Image 1 (cartoon, rainbow, N blue to C red):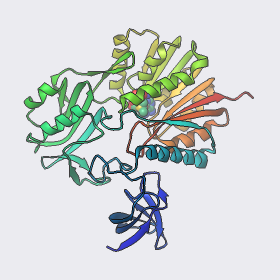
Image 2: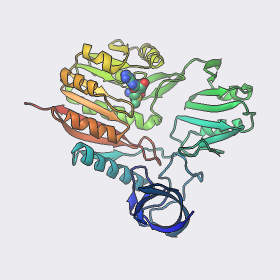
Image 3: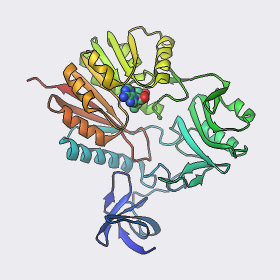
Image 4: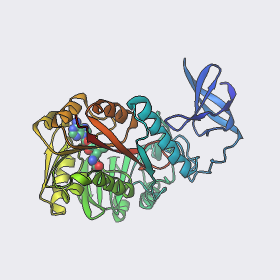
Length: 396
Ligand SMILES: C[S@@+](CC[C@H](N)C(=O)[O-])C[C@H]1O[C@@H](n2cnc3c(N)ncnc32)[C@H](O)[C@@H]1O
């Protein structure tokens, strides 16, 4: 394919260098603003192209040599220095909230991660033809790895051991490391060598060694983590984020609160100290089972967990305040209408996708004022960012 000289104008929302050439947009991974490079066109569509750097001819002062040399992994902005990655994320959410949510000057700050390497408590590894790694973005082409710099040191030790094992009958391995370690294997392999490194091993959904759940410590609380339930991947930043939720609810403590999309009950248990009554809704049965165990583990009695779909359960409930932490798809229209009917004083929206957040804030905007948004760098070196928004009911 053709090679072209490209000058990067800015980063797109996925952290790729964006430029215009031959009457089209071109996206070039790892090309930074103001840099110039000879680029090979690897995809040529009607309206856009995707290129790969062949030779960098003008380098940005913000470029760093990343700790990891693997290409096309999830760390799309690993060539940019860390403070600039934070600036990129803040600018990106600012632009999305303005464009799709009609909101300006609501972002207070972006809170960094103290650990910018080794922060991930969970890694999903793909295995193909006995080799371990990850699939190149959007393909099932395996990139073999020796280690992953954003995963915990213990996970990397386990990768080293796994690489010496016969993985010919395995297709995926998940490692969860919270001090206690769980390994979840899809396929068959000899596990004896893994036992000294773990608390729990599952093979093809069956517990084959150790404990059913592992325990994570978060602030003053302990949480059971199960095979399938959701847990924030950066424990240190999750704690900062939950404290921000508490701070945003400050003036209304003592009253009743709903925690929607509650996972294993992490936010609910954090709130239980400050609110008379906490009601949580979560659809994943295993997460709710963990949430009940977590309630017992932390000696908490004022939290009620409901296993069900928020859209089907919420209209039966009422509360003075609501916290929502939905998946990337955001809230449903019915969910938004039900929240508006409950009419809480304060609504805290925790989001991992600024696009759906902007859409939902716009819909909630008739009845609620978006007072402040704080961003959290839960996933350093990736283009992802978490947002926590404080919404306050308007007085009509
Ligand atoms: C981003 S996680 C938040 C979990 C929790 N707040 C935490 O911080 O650990 C979103 C959760 O929403 C749950 N979920 C997804 N769709 C749902 C629905 N329709 N009703 C209830 N829960 C749902 C998922 O199972 C997941 O646990």
